[in-house]
Length: 173
Image (cartoon, rainbow, N blue to C red):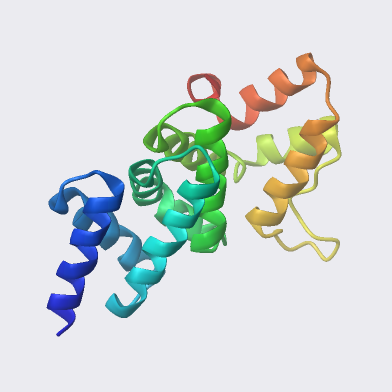
């Protein structure tokens, strides 16, 4: 029964994402493994992706490709699947880049904000603390939200500085 359900969802996903069934299965499998989803939950995941693609200028294929690319790092950083796909959708819509490119940029940025030199830079230059008052690490979702709020208030030179340090020169483009 689960195999039939998985095949059905993969075919539905392939149809809405305009990918082959094999590609869709590969992306859904990656997401399923990382987020420990049951086959019965995959139809809901497709619904979530479809809703995002209907409200943002992003294709389901971009969301699936980006998610399968960044899911491991995103989950480790504390992002729910819904949060991660929302960030990807916004990134694709805002930049016009592919889901795979946004996924790579997000993966690189999440890895870089773990570095002590980047955390010190965020604290010193922008007042963004990576740790809680008690000394523990902040959830990376919260940290990105704080970075986004701070970014909105920066001038162009400061935005460039923040982007280059956090994302790295290659991903900043």
